[in-house]
Image (cartoon, rainbow, N blue to C red; front, side, top):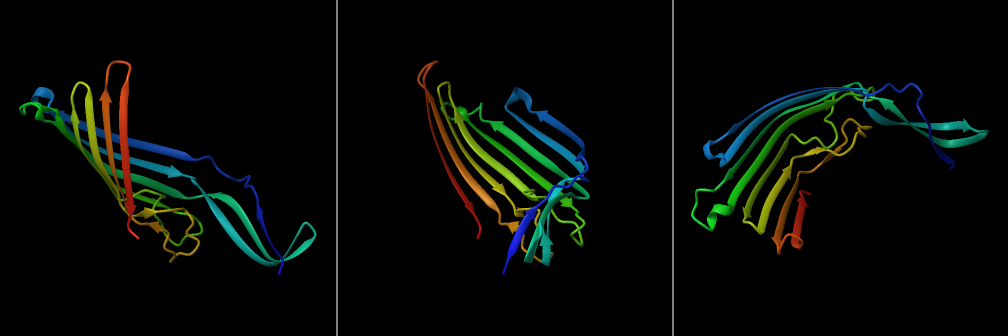
Length: 204
């Protein structure tokens, strides 16, 4: 069996268009020990690029006959969007007795919705790597010369690629989580020591 794959360009591609809106508010507590914020955003896109694959049989190309012939090209999608709400906050324990006055916490949570439509799909699908839920929680301790930060990050289930060639195909990656630790010590204005580590996991 003779087979071939041919990648071709697309002179009919349109430019990608994007329209973005966002708004946010932030409130600082008295003494500047903490703040909270709320933000909303919406991005609409037209003409994102996606790869199309066409399979053929008994095709002739450049004078040769192929039993199986695959054509790969790039085309524009239809409408797509990303929108969501983000909530964040930080609190420093400045009123605590020493040495606990160096502690603080920082959190951030985002709820998102996304979709993309293409001529090859019967319905809209989520955008690549746009999880519905993302959050971060961080505990830190800071002094004049010493810093330590422990952070946990989570990203929910999300599409792994735009290849939805089979409508029923499982094209999602599982949720991801990550734990980071970073320790910094400043010996003086010229020398600094840093130790960092990371543990990353995903559900099978």
